[in-house]
Length: 206
Image (cartoon, rainbow, N blue to C red; front, side, top):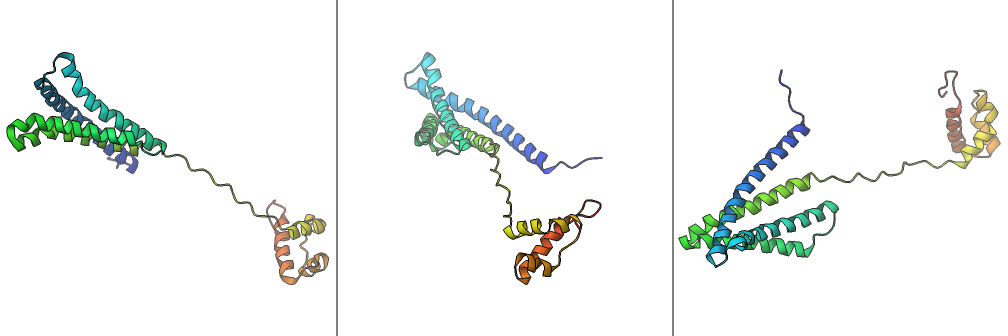
């Protein structure tokens, strides 16, 4: 018999499948974008390890800036302006490099060549969105439990009629008025309070 997945499991399944898709697209886009940038750097005179490492500095700048912004978001701190500027600079650089690589084949070629960079940056930011949504929410600070203030008159009544309460006898309103020198309404409230102090043989309130 098939059992329906709980909402929590469905949400987790969506998150993990989305993360897997984003990572897959990001890997493909990163490889293509790297090849375009490598070809561009090589075409402008660089070679060897320099040509291989320069494209990594662009993607690395995007990664480092995004990590700083993610850390600030998880800590509830303001986003550093430098991280925002460097992220924008890295995105601009990778788009420019890929577009320039395909510019020799016309505007359409530039758009096609720039697309992997767009997919890489977009996939990476989607992945960061998933990570941010999984950030632990701080536990709310518990509010102190409200404790009602004790009415001094009730304390006085409990002391004055302690013998009656212990014997299970509820004082009359008249007796409370005379003993405590209060009016009818307050005497009735005190009587209600005293009735809660009287216990039955089974230990419960009267």
